[in-house]
Image 1 (cartoon, protein in one colour):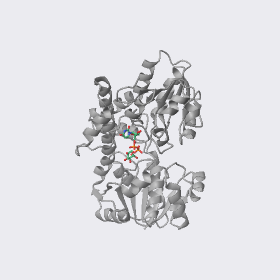
Image 2 (cartoon, helix red, strand yellow; image 1 turned 120 degrees about the horizontal axis):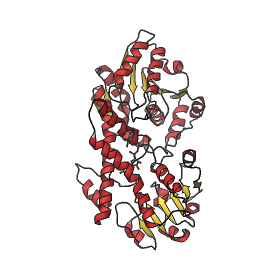
Image 3 (cartoon, protein in one colour; image 1 turned 90 degrees about the vertical axis):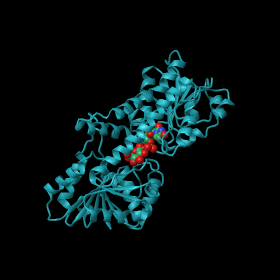
Image 4 (cartoon, helix red, strand yellow; image 1 turned 180 degrees about the horizontal axis):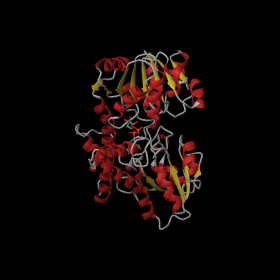
Length: 434
Ligand code: UGA
C-alpha cells in the first residue's frame, strides 16, 4: 500500500513511522521545511522514546519519506491520513481550519481513487463535513471514501501503544474501505472494531472524557481521604481489583494535563452544548481538575506563613514523565502562583527544560540537575513522577535542603520508606509525615 500522512505532530509522525515498520510505503507531508529536512535525517522534532531509531531504520530501508509538497506526497497514494492538529479555540471548541486546508489540498491534488482516513480528533459530524469539502473542491473525476480512525496513543509510550493497543477503531459507511483499512493494520495484530463514522468520532471523545473522569474522581476521593485519615493508594488498590472498575488511571495527583484531556473534555462539553445538552458530569470533571492543580499550593501555603523570599525547588515540569511536552502542565499554574507570592523558584526537569523556558515566567531559575535545584531550599515540590526522582534516596533531601520539607504531587515515595528519615513529607491523599 502507498500511504500519505498529512501532519507530522505526535499522531502523524508516530502513525506514519509505525506503518512503515509493518511494511507500508509512507510519505509524511508537513508545511515546515526545516522540520522536514530534520526528519529526512531521522531526527524527530518531538521527544518520543524509540521514535528516532524507528524513523532512521525505515528511511534507510526506503519506506519512509518526507516532503513539503502535497502533489509529490499524494502521488499514487491509495490512502491519505489526516493527522493535523485541532487546537482548542477560546470557547473550548476545536479549531478545524488545518483539517479544512488538508481537505482542500486533497481535493486539488488527488488523481486516482483514494481513501481519506481522519486520525485527528474531530467533533462528531466532521468527517461528513470533510467529505463535503473534498467533493466540492475536487479537481479530478475520482472517488474519495472517508474513514474515521481515531488514535489512542499516549505520549511517551506512543510506539509501544502502536504495536500493543487494545483496539483499532474504524468508522465508515463503506464496507470496502473499512476492509482495506483493516488489512493495512493487520500486521499490528490488534483487534479492529468497525463501526459507523459518527460513533467512531464519539468513541475518541468519550474514551478521553471517561479517563479524565476517572482521574478527577480519584482526586476527589484523595481530598476526602486526607480529611478522614484514609490512604488513597490503598483505596485505589482495593477499588481497582474490581474488574468492573479496573486498576488503571486511579493515580491521584495534581490533575491531568497535556494536549488531549483538557482540550477534548472541553470540546465534548461544547459538542453536547451545540445540541442543547448540558454535560453536567464532565463540567464537574473539568472544575475538579482546575481545583486539583491548586491543592498542593494550598498545602504549601498552610505550612509557611509567607512564601516571600523562600527558595522553592520544583522537580518535574512536563505534564507527565517520558515527554518534553509542557502543554497544560500543572507546573504552569503552580509556578505562576509561587512567583506571584514572591517565592524564589528553582526548577529542574530531565527533558522538558527547553520547552519550559519558552513558556514559564522569566523570573523562574532553572537548575541543571536535581541537587542544584534542591540545594538550600525551604521546600521541594515534586510535579512530575520521572523515574529519576522516584529513584532518589530520601537522604538526598535531608542532606541538601535547608529544611527537608517535601510536597509530593505524584506520590513518588513509599510512606514506610519515608518514615525512616527525618523529613517532613506531604503527599496526595495520604497522611502527612511530620
Ligand atoms: C491521552 C490518552 O491516554 C490516550 O489514549 C489518547 O490517545 C491521548 O490522550 C490523545 O487523545 O491523543 P496522553 O495525554 O499522552 O494520552 O497522556 P496520559 O498518559 O493519558 O496522561 C494524561 C494526564 O493524566 C497526565 O497529566 C497524567 O499525569 C494524568 N494522569 C494519568 C493522572 O493524573 N492519573 C492517572 O492515573 C493517569
